[in-house]
Image (tube, rainbow, N blue to C red; front, side):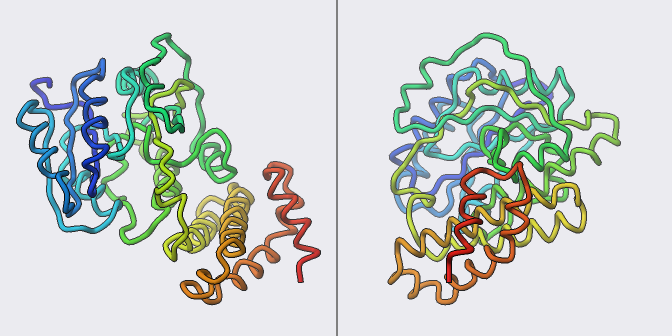
Length: 325
């Protein structure tokens, strides 16, 4: 750690993560870039998570455990943001891993391009050994304007909108935080953060662009028991999130309105299919959701069919709606 303090704050929210946390933290210790701090936010765990975090802190002063009562992923990340000291923030979930050159690639790109957001490639797998084959060759970044980045996220193209695998300037979080109590928090905050890049560029410290590094930096563990692979009432949050995104985009970023409609249509289709797969559970925990999805999809179908950038499966779903009574 430099005399001026760490350059990157790695924020690791952890709730009952004893099974995965050691491997996660080991992957940070193995980074080729070493000027970082790791803020491990124990979100009210009832297992050995706090003890594991304390053990790493005792071994390495760059690791700093923080404890809070259970409040969920967004609340834990916000606690980490409040505790962070570095000018750059990086979010790492406790069951995931980093490729050895992850932080080095991202910070070097940020320094060379002056981009306040640098996105790395996220690799999904159930085999963590893939991080051992970390390619170290140099790659050239791809650039997006804030409007292009917002549309790429909403059209679900090259940029996913995940908060993980991304290096953010801490300046972006002066006014923004993750929405607590809300799932699909990454989509929610990404659509608020990326447009701020243009405002941040007015300070002269950053360029008005987002850099994307086409190299793997982040290993996302494909866990069949994770939130995205199960059905619960919390999954319906995506409907409210995409409703808010469309409303905000219409007001402040009208060029991305078609992209926001596309993302909202995807969300409504996804929940509609989940409700079809779990009809009894759906009626019990989400009465009215089925009708809401049908109404919403019908409302959007003409816009979906007229937008050539929309994914093929969404256009197919929009056509099928004409046969749905």
